[in-house]
Structures are given as structure tokens and as C-alpha cells.
Length: 443
Image (cartoon, rainbow, N blue to C red; front, side):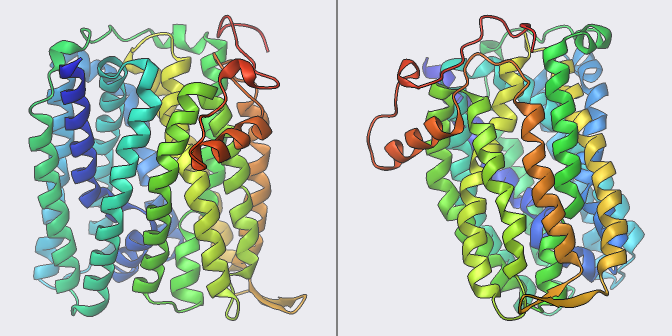
């Protein structure tokens, strides 16, 4: 048990230090850096999809694991590949801002990151006991959120106050320091405590697993919907509303601080009430946020930012746990091919969504109009559409068979109990607990 704890602690530290790099690959920081390198709206959409696009690389990860024999060594190698960003630092020192060089380096780093993601999932499934796996993910994410607060404030301040290109040289250098630390924290992980790497399950057998394929199809659609609008929330704030990166960063900080509380809550609830239950409630919450962005205009943006922070911190804390824990629950074993197919499906969906979003944003970017006294931009039409589509994805996730599931109203009551420091309801106290005897049950 002590070694389990030591492994989990090392994996938490690895996640925290990896955040030094990962925070630059998403949200307003990525948008600001991409605009600095002269990426247009369509190219910004494509680049924003890279973390999902290269999930397709996960399909070759099981083969690599079989050759390397050590998931820890492969994870170290994949994390180390982030040093490719030194090419961008060198270009900035030489005062060159070639958008295609930026795209190429980002693509290479994201391909390695995809390999790391699959390897991490397979390793954690073995190293962390199922009885508290969701709690571990929530605990790890809480620490990551805390570090994100510091990094977003620090990176935003550097980018806003230091002269270019020095500002980007500093933040990219800091990300490389974090990469080095993430590798060092992986060294004490005792892989002997995990089972030997499971021989990759044949792809044909996985495709015949009806329940797991339901999960893959749902994840494909979810990522497609998310990536339609993902890069354009920050783009709207920075380009249309002309808000400073530091101000936008403060909203990210507030979201991270609130997420720390809710990661712990959702982790406990997920272990007791089921990962699918947490997932459904999370989608209900984050489906609402794009609809509320109608308030993100020239006049009411301060109120809109507060509302967005509240909804997004609660909803995404739930989803960030569920989208990791659910495939571990639904897959019958730790074969990395299951996770590879899962993330590859999400990646392909993300590509499709990004292309749709990029084309749509290009068509809507010049549109402005008034509605019910609100001054709106064309991109608001995209946000409203995406909000509705997020709700519709719930229908697919509900078809997945899991060991435990409770309806949203029961789960919300449990969340309020945990926040109020009362013990959450035990599963048999739920009004409609759905315990499946087999994940292969029809439905």
C-alpha cells in the first residue's frame, strides 16, 4: 500500500510540472501566441485542434509499448520530446515569426503528447486501485488547477508587460524547465507494482465490443462539438472586445481556484455514484455556458465573465474526471489499444469540429447586429448552436452501460451534501440507482 501511495504521489507531481508546458497549448495563452505568430482564423482553428488531431497517433502506441516493454520509459521519452520547442525559442531570438514553423513544432510536440496520454492511462489503470481511482484523478487535477492559477497569472503578466519577443522566450523557457521536472518526477515510479503490459487487444475484437464502441462514438461527437467553438471564446474576448490577456487570464485563474474544490467533490461522488452520472451532470452544466455568452458583448462582458467562471469551473471539473475514469471503467482490461481507439475517435471528431468551426468563424467574423438591446457579433451564433449540440450529446452517453448510474437530480443532491460537509448518500439510498450486472448488457 505504501508503494501505491508513492507511485500516486510521483504521478501527481509529474502532472503538476507538466502543466508548465500544457497550459501554453490551450485557451487564451495559445490564442495569444498563435496571433503573435500571424496565424489567421482558419489556421488558429486547425492548430487548436492539434491536441485532439494527434490522438490518432495513439493507435500505434500499443505497438510501441510492446517493443519498449516499459510504459514508464515510454512516458519519459514522450514528455522529453517537448524540448522541440527550443526551435521556436531560437527563431524568436533571431526575430523570426514564421507561422508554418510554429505549426510544425506544435504538431510534433502534440504527436508525442498523444503517445504520452495513452501510456499514462494504461499505467495508471494498473498502478491506482479502482476503488479510489476517480478520487486520485480529482486529487491530481486539484493540484494542477492550483499551479495553473500561478502559471496563468505569471505567463499573462510576462506576455503583457515584457517587450516581444522576450515575453514569449521567457514563457517557453519556463515550459521547458517544467518538462525537465516532469521527467525527473517519473523516475521513482515503481512499475513493478503494475501488471506486465497487457498484450494489445486486436482492433477487430475491440470494434466488436458494442459497449466500448458506444463510448467511442459518443466521445467522437463530443469532441467534434467542443472543437467547433473552442478557440473562439478567447479569440472573441481578445479580438472583438479588446480585453487584455491579463484580464482574460484572471478569469482562468478564478476558474482554476473554484475547480480545486469541485475536483475533490466530483472525485468522491464519482467513486460512489458512478462516472457516467458525473459525466451527464457535467455536460448539462457546460452545455449552458455557450448559451450565456450572448452576454459577452461590449457592455455586459464583466457579468458574463463571472457567470462563465462559475458554470465552467463546476462543469469542467466533472468532465475532466469523467472522461479519464469512464474509459477505464468500460474497458474490460488495461490493454492500451482500448484507450488508443477511444482517444483516436475523439481526435478525429476534434479535427472535423475544428474545420467546421474555422470555416464558420471566417464566415461570421465580420457580422455584427443588435438583438433585444444586445450588441452581438456573428460568432455569438456559433456559441448558441454549440450550446444546443452539447446537450444533444447526452443522448449518446446515456446508452453506455456502466456499473453504476444515478439520475442527475440525485447526484446534484449528493454534491450539495458533500459541499455542506455532510456524507454523500450511499448508492442504495438513490431513488433510481442503475447497477449493471454486465457492461455487455443490451441497450
